[in-house]
Length: 195
Image (cartoon, rainbow, N blue to C red; front, side, top):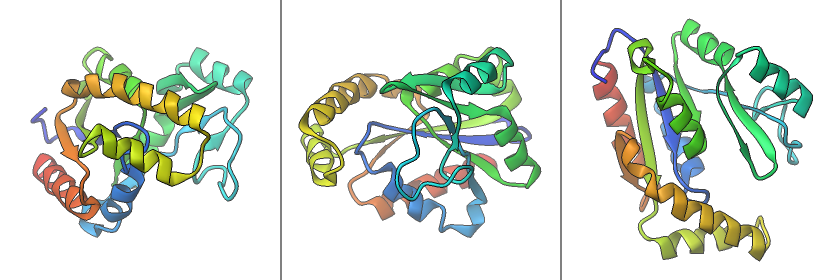
C-alpha cells in the first residue's frame, strides 16, 4: 500500500444514496488532486441528459460479453439487470494524461479488483468506503431523491445492508455527514498517499 512509485488508482464506493456524487463534486474541484473520472462501460440505457463517453460508455450486452471474453475489463459486475465495468484502456488513458483514475464502483466491483493477484504490486490502490451517519439517514436520503418507487428503494436498502458488512476490506472509511468535510478528509488522504 505504501509504494508511491506505482501509479495510483482511487476506488470510491459505498451504498446507493450515501452521497458519493455530492462528495465527488467537491473532490473534482480540487485542482491539486488531478483526479480523472474513470468512465465505466454499461449495458443499461442512457438516462435523460447522459452522454456516451462522458457519463458512461453505453454498449449492448453482446458487446459487453465480448469485452469480458477479450479481457478488456479490470472489473465488471451485474447489477439491477445490467452489466457495469471498468475498462483497462480507460485507466491507461488517464495515467498517460498524468492524472489519477477515480473509480466510483459497486462494492462487488471493488472486491473483484482487490482480489486480482498482485494488483497492489501493479498500482497504488487507495480505497474509500463512504458511510452514512446512520442507516435511518441513508433511508431518508434515498426517499428524498424521489428517483425510484418504494420497491426499488426497499431493494437498495437490502443491498446497502449487505454492502455495509463489506466495509472492512477498504483502506479508509469516510462518514458523509457534511459532504464538504468528507471531501476534504479524502483529499488529505489521497495527497498523503501519493506524495
